[in-house]
Structures are given as C-alpha cells and as structure tokens.
Image (cartoon, rainbow, N blue to C red; front, side):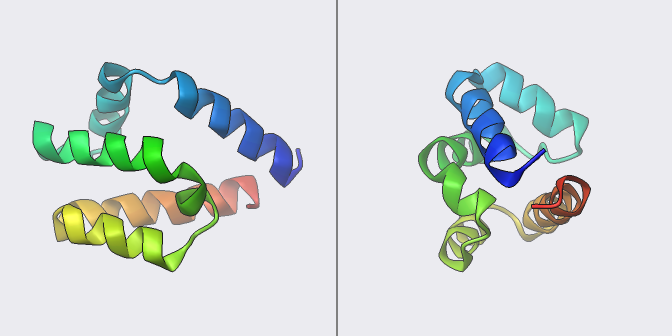
Length: 88
C-alpha cells in the first residue's frame, strides 16, 4: 500500500473516531494517564493529525508541552513503530 493510501485511511478513521473509542485505544496501548490528558490528545489528533502523520517537529513539541513526559515517550515510541511497520 502506498503512503497516500495509509494517509487516506487514517484521515477517515480520525474523522469518524469517537472520544470513547480513542480512550479505549489509549488504554490498550498503555497511554492512559488521566481523562484530561486523554482529552488533550484527542483534541490534538483531531486538530493536527496531518502534522503528526508527517512528523512535523512543531506538532510534536506542542504535544510534548501539553502531556506528561512518560506519556509523550510512549506515544512517540508507538509513532516510530507505526512508521516502520507501515513504511511511512
């Protein structure tokens, strides 16, 4: 699958994902710290998913400034793993 295909699939998922489903995803991936942090991540995902997908430094700095260091490190590791797995 090409990069555009992954990007389009991700866009559709993000447009349709509900906050409770996103929270379940966070919990399954050991990224759940608190409801307020989950809300921040959900909002950032909805607002700047392309910046995350594209690996924009300013997007990751924004995320890092709003959540705990532990959660950020786990989230970034998950991001790196997905990049390798899906060759993006």
